[in-house]
Length: 387
Image 1: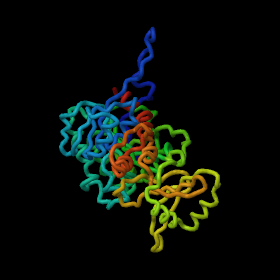
Image 2: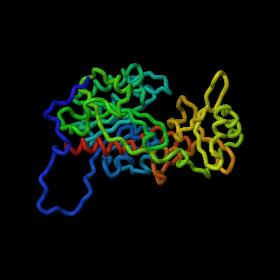
Image 3: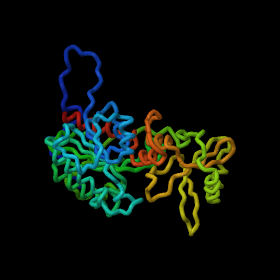
Image 4: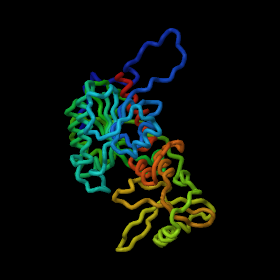
């Protein structure tokens, strides 16, 4: 089922690039940070997660509002605003890693599912064109997108991308990771990691079969593919935070009339569940408006995590919070700062612009701790081994 790289390109992580210790150890220094490209950089959450591990040498996005968030936090000297169709790979500096969170609209369950060759999600092919134009292609490529990349159309969208990467001389593996292992938000995303087939590949970063990174949808999409790699990383420790921990409890309700209307939509069953919970504790419960049997209802979830953040113009209704404090119930939209916290961004992260601008900047991003876990446990070791 998987075609591993040649054995002579594989060695235990500790045996690759090892050096004899010097007779007199020098002063302690920080490990060198590696350079990377970030295509479709959005609001900069990947760069935030990579801090101290990778430095962005070049980043790009076409959205002015997300660019404003990125540059407010990471500076503008390395940022190129504009469409990827105008980027020439021959003009870019060198870096061993390129990341692309390409548009998801055409392979998202919330969209029309027009496919990876459609106008927006099809920009992934422009990314690969830029890679092809580089005098020295990056050793490691990462493509990130929604779960539909591997699950829709029996994995056909992923298989097209995989085959294209293999034809370019890379070995490739996909992982499906839920951000709820780090933050109180259910957010499944696919991470496709490709490494130049001529490169060294530490055995510690792969497994002989699937693991926690490869649910059924990934395994089905991978079946029979050439050049497939089962990537391996340690599982993170159990998450300690809950949804209540990220709530801005003093935030005002935007519309009191809408609040009462929304509270009246809670189903009797969910209202009963609310009443059964300890009355002396603050409570935060997320929910979405749905139509059931011709009637609109507010459906709640009681597992202490938020549903997946989505952009305001997406096909789904906006997520609401039902809050109980001081003996009363309130209902409101998430604040922009709450969306940032759900993405693992620090409270110092600047989010200029309107409410919708901030919500979209966060809803389109990659959860910071997920990006950091990948950088620390997979991408940095791959790059370091082949430096």
